[in-house]
Image (tube, rainbow, N blue to C red):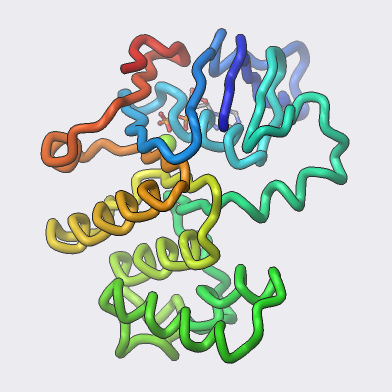
Length: 225
Ligand SMILES: Nc1ncnc2c1ncn2[C@@H]1O[C@H](COP(=O)(O)OP(=O)(O)O)[C@@H](O)[C@H]1O
Ligand SMILES: [Mg+2]
């Protein structure tokens, strides 16, 4: 379960007098386990900031935030890494590790959680095949196109079957067929119990896959259906 209760966020002002402006105001909503939600709104509305709160990269400036049943505002900092490992993230700018192959990037979450190497090999190979990268397994990020890097990032985010999956514009570099394949994957994960939140500008994709949406405008939640 994910719950925002009157959450506000301001980024810390560095080297500036005074407080920086709030970028999210009075955000309240609850996501039960296993739901799929679009996160919609114009550029600058606060979508990435809201996702950062959900994957614990930033802490709320006010209000209460519960992620996977843990009150993050009250939890000690040392409790967060364990919680963080249950969250899969597709970053808008991919954030692949440049010195690791596609295989090793995707394998990382499994290795961190101590999976046996035989299972890592089987799971990663199957996942990379599924996203259409069977022939690029040994390639490094710098050798991959934007769309290929995005698919590696998606594979890495889902490989360990996270309880919460957040994806920031995950189809920005994909063609329609690849985007549809991603949607299949996300729906399947949500069917298996993962809570999925996808920020997107891809109106055609949203039209093809109607689902409840969180709608952000100027840092406020203006719709939640
Ligand atoms: N690291 C940051 N430091 C300060 N301000 C930021 C930072 N990241 C985003 N912002 C500001 O927060 C607001 C919301 O940005 P963002 O969450 O990226 O929106 P979106 O993803 O909807 O385009 C914008 O005004 C942006 O300039
Ligand atoms: Mg954004």
